[in-house]
Image (cartoon, rainbow, N blue to C red; front, side, top):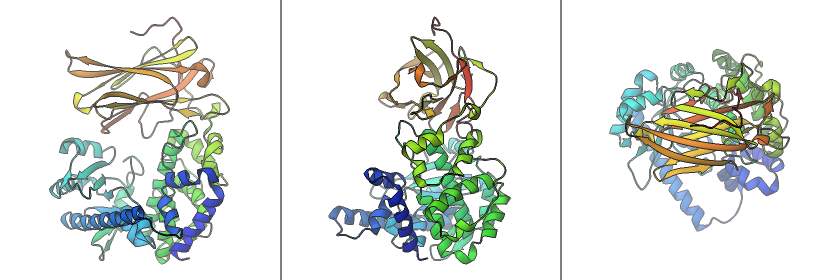
Length: 476
């Protein structure tokens, strides 16, 4: 099936699935709006033509930078997604938007690649030492110094973000990588490109499910990754067989995660050869981990519509047996590195008093998210309120939660302390025998991301049963 026919077939399915009144916003959220617009017949506006020219210059600039980086790094970086996929897979490269250059290197090459990027004109966000430290957890974003056509590079030392996701697979990517002589860049082989796209989609689907709230899709649901996979299979069909996909999935022990991604893929591309791939549903999910029950539910959805609106609420709703069960914890003193939290009841509200310390140089961009399991038939099971610290002070991005924040400077210790108080109606929180389920998350300067309980990336849904203090409790 030609690429344009594959794209039009997908759009026909989505046109049937998307509610007409939300279709435009959903196409944009799924990163398919440019493709949708590109397939429509009509006269180009001046604004559209300006965008096309700008995108073309930016894409050509990205490919030139990629070629130069690969040359300087002596084939120590892999290029994935973005500008290369746009020119390699799509009938019109303008249809495939991208935000940055994604580069993957091996851990042992990371220091040299960082220096090369810096010498090529990209600015390191932190010191070289801090960038190396961040790479051990997640990618580093570097920005070019150009003002006319600014570029960003995401540098990874793993196949996916965070590093803990199938950590060893990056070695296989490099072992099987192929040199694209036309573009002068190193890329994964076709089968690995398909697997990379599917797992990348699955990771963002997890974030979408966990961080969507109040009937608003706050995280993009990147269906474009699935289209990338479909078009890769169409173009390189002789290099991609069901046996190869199944064999490499088994190699990485990713059967459950790949089965889930393929289940969604089949809804959009039922006639793709990739839809015929059969992978046994076994093992555990590296990506969903503590909320693996969500991954298992996704295996059985029958429509893309299930990922939106009221059906999404049902898909993400917790049952008591889904919640991580362990010994209850007193709300009087919850502590982790950098965070101290007290949970208490007052006047029908659950009050959360959080105090966190950050290094003064890591203040901008600090966020505190309060995730909790919610009650009620018509509400999502997971909600959050976000506090973002900026140069101008504290801004609160909440979902109707009463909250306030203050800043305390302690000259004696040289630390900066942030105190945040949140008040949530007790009726809005799921309670079992007087226990509440929540997990505050602290993120600052991207380098450090912490939860009160566990790791931000891997244990976001590790809800602990907390018994709040009584009404007469007064936090210091």
